[in-house]
Length: 88
Image 1 (cartoon, helix red, strand yellow):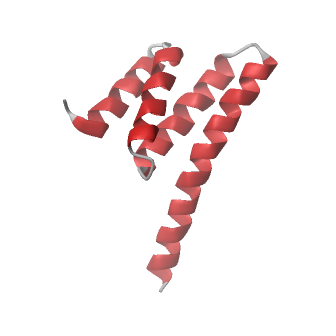
Image 2 (cartoon, rainbow, N blue to C red):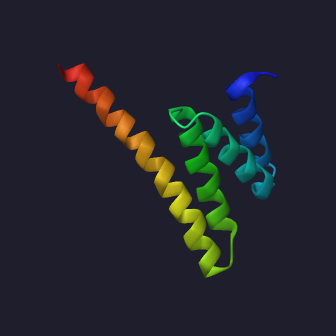
């Protein structure tokens, strides 16, 4: 109940509270459910970047950074497309 916005808000609340493991699970599920959602990818990039920063394992840092970069690229591509549309 509440839809994607409520789901992402909960993920951000969990991340802010330090429960990055569950926050990552929620944003990952959100992106799988709505793969075209820029908001979901933005939240995923934020949460995974926070988890990377909190991690001590170099291998885990790499995995979390890759997930953050993947979603950041989706957001960046959407921003560029929006700018291109606006300039036409």
